[in-house]
Image (cartoon, rainbow, N blue to C red):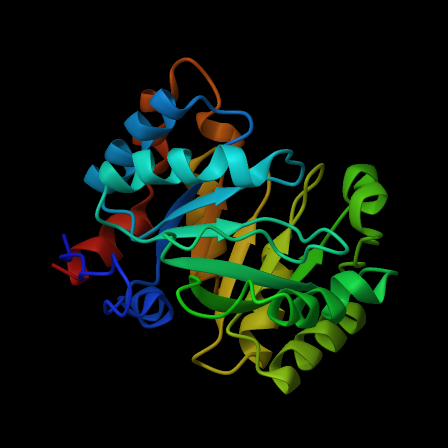
Length: 268
């Protein structure tokens, strides 16, 4: 396991999380919802995914309240249980920008390219920095293009996000836009359906080599993991698969994916 760089305290050096992710492609990454999962369980899961060889852990939620009160202690407990990067992934709130915990190593700053509201496409990023939330010692920003596929009333009600059609013309148009604007990564998500492997293939064909591709939504089996990795996804993201009493068995199943094992061995 990679040693954690010293990154606590003013002026301390942090590890480059983006470079870390680029160097460890071909893995699954688990998402813990801090507003759904109790902190004791999150700590257990942080230890388990670290032992499984995952290169990072996402702390994310679409809906949240009392972020400033809840998250610092929650994050510190998780960070104490693992030496892999902790990455925040939360939507912004108008007037407040993206929520930040300075002790986190990194945070995704998504541009919701399919949103009807320009705030969620780009204005939220400017607001975050205008409020001083994005300046050091803030977590390292990861600029991402976020796209939703399939009907998602919850995301539309929260952020005006319309689903992207998965025909080749629509997918290529968004892929070209993501490359043109030079995002660090592209996050493909479907809450109620599936991102197709062809969508992943088209994005990978268009994106620059250094741009990371994430596939997420409804991932439950090692076969799904393999299919996305073989289609060009750099990371396959899952949350609900471990939101079950037998989550350790579910984790073992997902980590049995052939692609994951082969790429993990190549890094040892």
